Length: 129
View 1 (cartoon, one colour):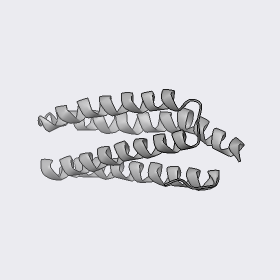
View 2 (cartoon, helix red, strand yellow; view 1 turned 60 degrees about the vertical axis):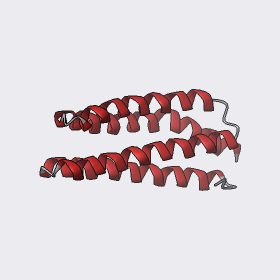
View 3 (cartoon, helix red, strand yellow; view 1 turned 135 degrees about the horizontal axis):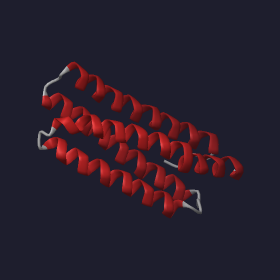
View 4 (cartoon, helix red, strand yellow; view 1 turned 135 degrees about the vertical axis):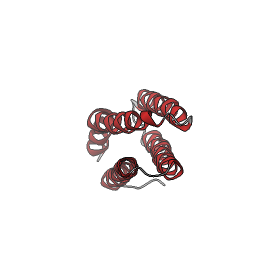
């Protein structure tokens, strides 16, 4: 899992961010098309698994590179995941009117997180050389 160069690590994180965005948009398209609940639920679950896997991978990369703000960053991940899981459980109760709220929250949270905390990690890796 540990790439030797910061550029490799940043490229990997970038690919994961792109995949997460694609999962969110796929779920949004299904919602707009009026897809059956089962299909929509599968798309939501795929996005959430991808998010959790990405966060775990990113935290491992931070720890292996001795990022000084790794604990703070992991706490942010945990907060995002908890809010997403709460919304997802509500959607699972067939409160499908919350699906757009979940997707909007997920998209916005990822964009804010990438622009702030993930950017700080990217700068750290770049400076590390």
